[in-house]
Image 1 (cartoon, rainbow, N blue to C red):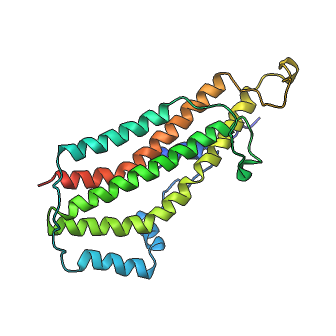
Image 2 (image 1 turned 90 degrees about the vertical axis):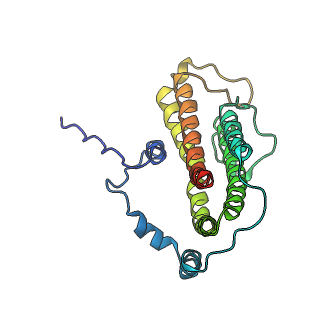
Image 3 (image 1 turned 60 degrees about the vertical axis):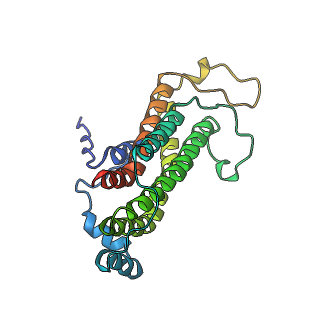
Length: 240
């Protein structure tokens, strides 16, 4: 009997490879060229704004507090706080408020979905605030760095909506991954104890431990992606 050919390895960042595995998707062997993709994302209004930020007169450096070790420590503190929240215990109790959009979602997966959504909101809020603060401090260091801050602001305004739309699919992919792992590791229905009420039993088993670790890996990878711009701004701020 002919064997099915193995799936080709997915190229690209670890986060993309992880999501491709969750969705059981085959991605192109050759990733799209970044410059070509950016050209599709920039409309003419954004392109003009970016051109002005790159080629216009250097802005004057503003006044305000200089970047110091305290600001660096604050970025590390926020990152550590988000890491701790990702690793925190997940409340497995059914959601108190009914969510119409979650009506068709497996009740056993709902607590994990809520954890994922809450972490995404927390990461977006915290990193967005830090990024703005880093730009403000960068603009006060020198005219050249003020230009860099302007370029980063344009890039965030252009790419952030697309980033959020793409990251919004993560909970759904995790739901598919949860279902596949549970189906593969579920016991024989004849051996399963019937629940006395309508509350779904909390799933358990090696497959659940694997799912929880995979969800953690996905959230950690997303956190790294959200901190990439901040790390770049921090590197610029530390350069004198």
